Length: 110
Image 1 (cartoon, one colour):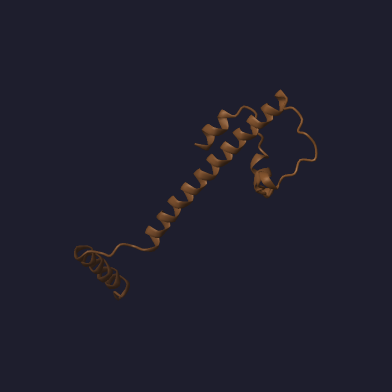
Image 2: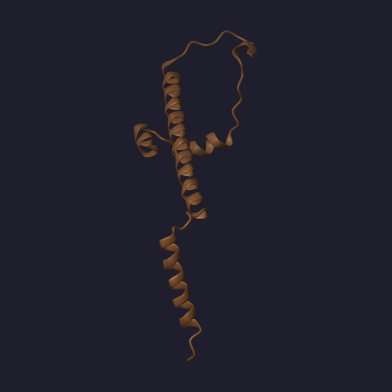
């Protein structure tokens, strides 16, 4: 999914992840912002920059979502390995027979 998002953006910068992860984001309410002067009119280049940044944010969200899903899948796999299922009576009998055979082979006089 992350690869598809990367292919969707034409001019993807490889430093995007580093730049976004290193920079803290500050949330400011619009009511707290006091304009010092009248805002300048928005030109076409600024609109292109905004759309490029929005595409980069979508890529980052896709990457982080994929990482979260992969991490959860790995945690589930590890929990299955760490907590083996209890053996049934037939499996216990087979295990005991093998243990007895190995014990007999190891302790057999040479």
